[in-house]
Image 1 (cartoon, rainbow, N blue to C red):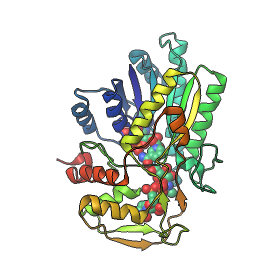
Image 2 (image 1 turned 60 degrees about the horizontal axis):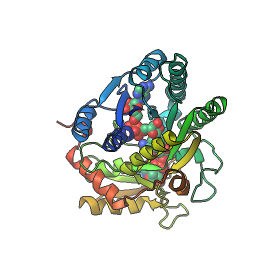
Image 3 (image 1 turned 90 degrees about the vertical axis):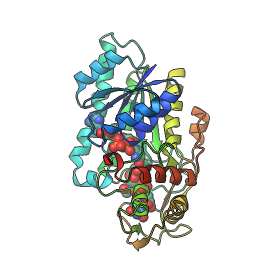
Length: 345
Ligand code: NAD
Ligand code: UD1
């Protein structure tokens, strides 16, 4: 049973590939390496007990993508591919509308085409990487899936539009099976330390920044605001171990294959941790100091955001099991073993 992973060489895709493989499913990685490194394929071969099939190319190329579907006959597609830097999306919105929305349109058209040609005789099953960013600034926490959606930047806007496109397609053709997964804050790495998050340049997100401070690549962390209405004044988020997130994808694929329909679920732990909680947990895990300075709030940040993960539990039989200490220990193993990410010698 092949599962096609667009963006499968990226951070979440690579961890999902390992988990699918461990569960006896066969991941096929599709990627153009615009934000990943081909070395990841060697690491995946090591972790999966043999090389994975790679389709190197662009999701924007609909005819090629149609051919990939016809050639591999996947039972489901997980669509990770896309750009994800919030700041860059504000500076270059067209890049995001083109690659994220254009990529999703291209993939869905390829799926329609592959079925229409009669060569892919199955109901299309698609899992999509959405984000808690679609909740904007939530009025209360924890957040359930029926909270109002909004967007504050072009990246978030693309997630909202793609969610709407998927529901329109499902309404137009109810044979489609669609699973929308709204990730909270994925962090950590595979416990082997062989694969992990490898941001290009200055990290935008907290955990990779903290890890680079601990390893000495950066002198200190800037804590963006300590005057939020939270217990210690710093922002609170629902950090989820990337391996828990990966198993959420396996559960979503299995649910789609078991029963027609569509669903939208939060993938989070249901627990909030502050920036300073994260600093302390990382210091414990690494045995290194993480110096920090309080800096002004970052534009667009919300005070607190965490999931009600109840629907994923009921619908998918999935829940996160790994602790904040596990997340930091695994992130540290990856960071200390690969100080320059996949570019390490
Ligand atoms: P990532 O950048 O590590 O992985 C994305 C992969 O897609 C990369 O390997 C990149 O090379 C590939 N890609 C991009 N455009 C492509 C194209 N046109 N054709 C083929 N390949 C292409 O990102 P990630 O953290 O693994 O995130 C995966 C998905 O999850 C993204 O859609 C992202 O928006 C979403 N998401 C991520 C987070 C997070 O914190 N990491 C949170 C919420 C949602
Ligand atoms: C950010 C994005 C969100 C996206 C998510 C994906 C913004 C405004 N939001 O979410 O749209 O879906 O990443 O992973 O960019 N922090 C610091 N110092 C740092 C970095 C972060 O104090 O150097 C704080 C932030 O203010 C926040 C917390 O750490 O309170 C987490 O930040 P981050 O990892 O960037 O995630 P989000 O802001 O939740």
